[in-house]
Length: 531
Ligand code: G4P
Image (cartoon, rainbow, N blue to C red; front, side, top):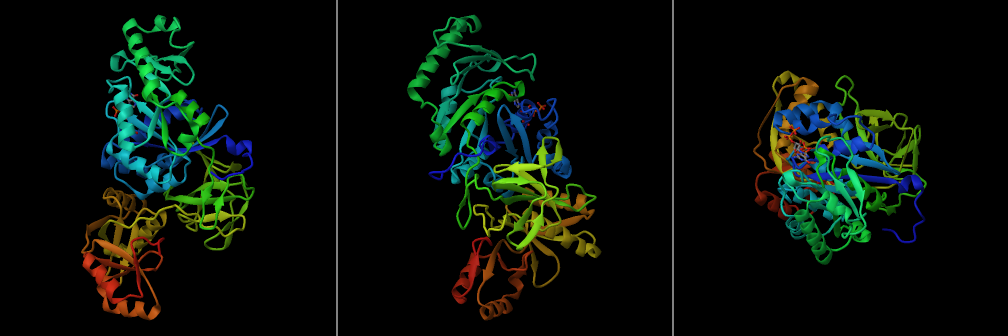
């Protein structure tokens, strides 16, 4: 945090911009839905369900991705809860790891980690957690599915502490589990919350309690369970640290709430916690300086581009995280990369099921800017200052495959589709100097399936991915004469990326070492941004 900062304008201070991280099936979709329900953004549970179900099989997932409407409205959702404005940014749901996931986490100030009470910390949770840790992102934890047989509460907390090396502070404590799950003791507010199994959309009954000696407890909890609760809470007080907001904000402590998303139980308390303890919009790093949210000049950065939301119009939406200022519709912003002015006349805010024109937005908000391809991932928009936001990673493709149009006459169409996915950041696309066809590089194998399916659906173009003779790509840069010499000798390994930059393709580390040795003036890098 920056020192000596003025207080944030109230409109900015009330914003909470976060993502949910979870292993598939832990309940991310269900929790999202309940957030929206309590945030008044949807009327009924069930409206975002389609998404969670679609994750079950690959083809279903791809079909869902085709229904751009759903995934777009779910990419960033804004809703009010009490005095707070929540901006929930979706992390892609499938189990394959994609660059999108990392980038999304650069656009938020906090993450809610959902774990399954029976399964604890699972592989994907751990991976996503590590990404959050890279940025010391504050994390609030929700232990879900307490209505099912869950592990012992101390065991769950220990597992998080040990596996993720973070202090855990219980904000609530479960009373029983599975069929015997009654509800939670709200440690932060000294309240008893009892779950209503009959109506899953109803807010729970809460009972004010005056300490653990309050006789009201005995009216609601059977004696044996109450004795256990008292004992556990006493132990928890001795063994576990109390909630410390500073530790939460610097990423060294996570508060944990227990509940059952499907029963709407524990969700409101979690939302209260995000509002009360979660971070306000944070300063954003640029190569030049840190941009503080309260600065009056508007700045923002594109962290995601989504194309073909409406297959009839080849429009794209660039998702921009506002880093500072108060944005108003119609503003003219400076597009730093092209040095051009863009009038932002139809920005979009994402309200659950609908897109809506954004009349205004503040630092911390996510707005969508429809455009025809000018806006790319990492681009900065400012009111004149030449800033370059940092921290948005670009990944070296780890898997390479050749791609061809099923119909050779359609090669040009394929090129267009591929270039567009390259712009979206969905893949790296290389055109070899010799021969026809393209080579596509991705980070996770499932991305090939998604691409093939999208090309077919959005461009009516059947494509074939096929094994490539290459396994690695390196961007190459250097003095002109040396580049020319290098390129003429290694023609069979040379390709151009979608920006026209030179790439060396190979299957042998030995080749890379050889180039470094033989051409000392050339620089080889695994990602482009690092050049
Ligand atoms: P995800 O997005 O993290 O992948 O999880 P999602 O919300 O889709 O939930 C995965 C499964 O877990 C769903 O069951 C969902 O209903 C269930 N679930 C979510 N929260 C709770 C909870 O608090 N308690 C219990 N018992 N189950 C929960 P499903 O059988 O796969 O789908 P469905 O038939 O229930 O829709």
